[in-house]
Image 1 (cartoon, rainbow, N blue to C red):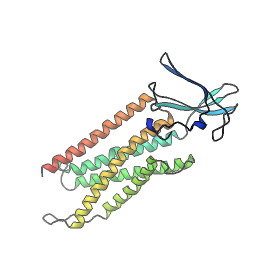
Image 2 (cartoon, rainbow, N blue to C red):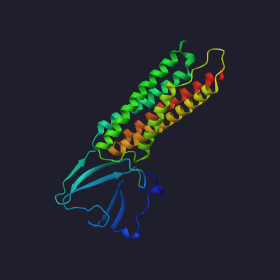
Image 3 (tube, rainbow, N blue to C red):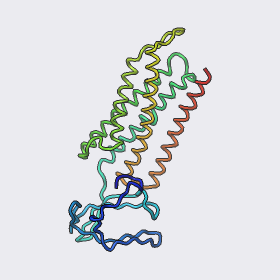
Image 4 (cartoon, rainbow, N blue to C red):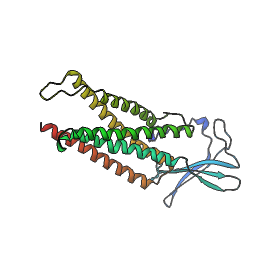
Length: 269
């Protein structure tokens, strides 16, 4: 199993195909799988007569698809007793997700909108105060959420930055710090009637490109976070789907305001 898509699910080598009496039957809307498994095999987790940790998972169609529902359980093969397992640190990962959504899904888009739609705000640099204030709040939330992620990963004894979501988070953290430093040491805007110096023009281009890149990465990261949280804590398929739809509706509205609003005032110049 190398990924979520069908083409990344590959059969094991023939010499490792040790299941016997295997069958799959579709009956009364249910998929019934039966097989006989050797309890102790080289390179495999040994199955014991006592307690064993197992995973169950199922999709929504009689085909090889994404397992929308899944969980872990302990099964004692001697007594037949079973107990469901719950992944730890649910509150910490939820706090991580909420903080990062507020940062990249709420405050940063509003900060960008304050800049692009500045003509709608009172004169006197109000837009800049809003832009800076919202980005400051976003950075504080980002740092706190990033710290929770690092601390919880260490608590769970997992390797840091071991998957695309974690590596992207690290890259975004570095990019965000550079963006803030660039904003602090930015070349001054020329006075009215003066021409912008090349260094100011270059800074504005770099600031916008890095800002758009961060926002795009943030949108992808939040969606990946929803999927990862669902897998880790076996959330209900319908709940996960509803949250995902609500998320993309919100992001689409934020994006539309930024793109259409920015283009409107740009063309009016």
